[in-house]
Length: 405
Ligand code: PLP
Image 1 (spheres, rainbow, N blue to C red):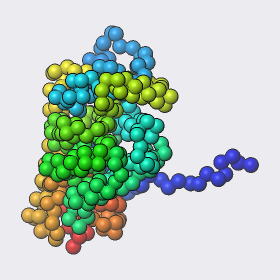
Image 2: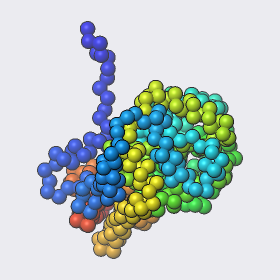
Image 3: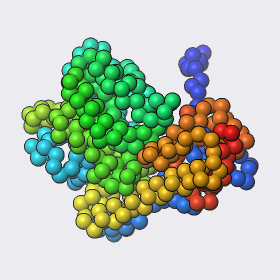
Image 4: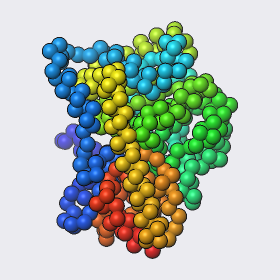
């Protein structure tokens, strides 16, 4: 008898199906806005010039070898990554009570962070973790995989296409004390809607009031605004306010190192003693899961962050990406509102930030975009702004215009 006869067929990943359909579509005019990866103005993947330079430098280093990294990663990488995200003013860093470990990009940081909490967090009741509605699709699966139940808090208001502060605050105050709250540090995926600094203050107040724990996911530092510090401002502010937290950090988008899986998890501890206990347990988790992390991307990022010249170049490359996306938002907005006079309000196109924009289109309208317009986007109405460029933005706007009329 077949040993896996009872295995049910799982549905395919709904997002990753779209590029396959796009590829098979014979239409001459077609656009793929489904996947969150940066594209240049010609629609091609972009290797950052700084990454090319650092790669050359690394390959020419006669001391380069392929030995294992330490269990928790390359120390020059993890310490640079911590400074990059928490900032030079971080009290926790100055007091040497941050545990930083290298992870398999942002996904790995989320996983190890969640696994660590599932084992060691001082849970007050059931193992539940609050995620925004909506959120990155993988958050639910990552939490469920380690035995944590994801619970949704209101975040996005479809009626106004904006942040639902009141809804979020009442959920935070209704949650049991010491709940774990997942927050997108910047460029919320999938909505592109972030709290303003004044709204973050209110969220921090509510977190402190109920002694909640912040699980910060930061996948877009620098990529959102073009400025590494500005995109880390919310989580740095939370640290200053004394909200207990961990931070998941990814270098997939801001360094274009998607496939190299470069990331880190930072756990801010109460003191040095707690930090050494937390480090010892994270080390055991890391050892049993991956033995030790991959070297190539971590070496590149350590070089790029620690070398002043490369760091400067990286900041310029980040600006190139962020500014291209911001200018596509402006062009799209202008075509819709000034040329086509498309019905509806489109301010959200320019106020949203980062890789994605929530257009406000419903599932049916998305179907029409795909079937009649050959514009591929996710069913929730999300588009990846990075898929737009000067050659296709007009066609996209015209297709959108027809669908909402
Ligand atoms: N978290 C969020 C919110 C994301 O949008 C992503 C990527 O799309 C990730 C984490 C993780 O990405 P990666 O594992 O490629 O770093």
